[in-house]
Image (cartoon, rainbow, N blue to C red):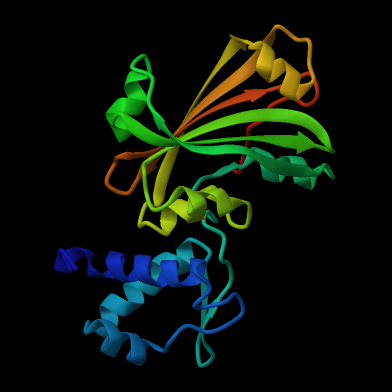
Length: 234
């Protein structure tokens, strides 16, 4: 605990990690306020502030006389007013599936100055693509800090990429996306089974709680198969 003013934030993050890791499963109750006071050696007010944060983010629900129940173990609940593109596609009745093509430790190309600035001269590179209703649709290249072993990263088919980062205390606080129309390399055309010379390119930067970049991804979308949409809740 670094600062008394941030104790409740640290406690909220610890409880959130326990939820993400399945220590507190969805539908179960977290320890009582009295138990959390003793566990973290803090006041009741501090515990309640931590629970308020997680209730506001959609992880917990507190009911008088019934304790505090875990509602969700999704990494992002109310992070943004913008609905995720994948959730919108699935809500419209389409099916998205992903396939890992490669997981490797790489020497970053000197031309990729942003990646070097974020992770140094070596990084993990995760290559995968998504199918939309069983048809190739998105090609992804994720650049990540060298955390843990490559073999563990290769298992993210079982969990989400952002949960993998959270396992190393790299919690996403915000995303920044930029878009451009970009030439399609022949290998990507082959993977996406398209003859289009241009594709929609999205570069995503994911930032941690201290403002550092914890992921950079380059994605190529075949928007002839399905347009990219952004939907906001007002």
